[in-house]
Amino acid sequence: MDILQRKSDILKAIAQPTRLKIIELLRDGERCVCEMIPLLNEEQANISKHLSILRQAGVVEFRKEGVSSYYKIKDRRILKIIGIADDMVRKEILNSAELAREMGLKR
Image (cartoon, rainbow, N blue to C red; front, side):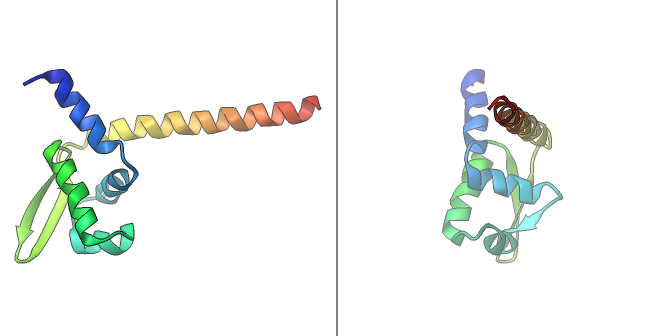
């Protein structure tokens, strides 16, 4: 197994807005796909495709109960990666706002 390729697969899997939303929905624990559909405002087939990508990357795992499929985060350290991205975006927004204020004062 190529370690760099595996890392890339994980990062690619989470580098998509719908998949990030799915991970956020699973932050507090396991959810049925049927719960995710209205929250994501996406078609069931599209959500299933995204869940499959996350599953192949090892980000989520699932279990079947009757006709329902339940997903959960496989390794919660993925939330740290997303948290770092959140912090980076917040810092960028704050810096932009500060720069805009400074520019406003210099006029």
